[in-house]
Amino acid sequence: MTADNNRPVLVPVDFSEPSAEALVWAGGWSASIGAPLIVLHVIHDVAPGAYVRTDEGHFARYESAAAEMMEHFIEKIATRQPAVTLAERLLVEGLPVTRILEIADAREVQHIVMGSQGRTGLSHLMLGSKAERVVQLAPIPVTIVKGPGPEPERASEK
Image (tube, rainbow, N blue to C red; front, side, top):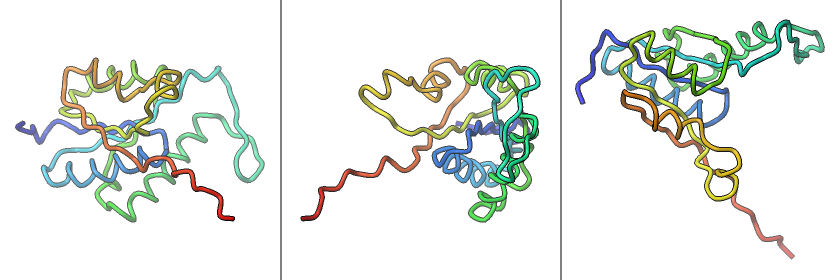
């Protein structure tokens, strides 16, 4: 695959550990090929004027809280991958898969990098996978970076 260094790499994040792993990977890869990086968070269909309680106990508009979460998330990732500090941050509202594909098209993205929990079995059937849907529908390459798996159950020590 030949990278077009003028076209950005898109990393949709939900602030989870798998999306953190995807951002670390994408930050290094985009820096190595000299491509811009866009970090996207989709605010899932929030009611107009919705508020959320902050850690300090205050109320903030959902969009403001999401922007603050994005900044904290990127600061945390920057300790592992400094290139992410140069990333464009983008917050949009809507259905995640739809908005990811729309942004990728509108911004002429060359590649999408997403994290995945790697669920299988019943939990996968019940919850579905946004990453899987993006892979199926995207007309451009998509890289899935698996996050750490669930903690194995340990037998009780007697």
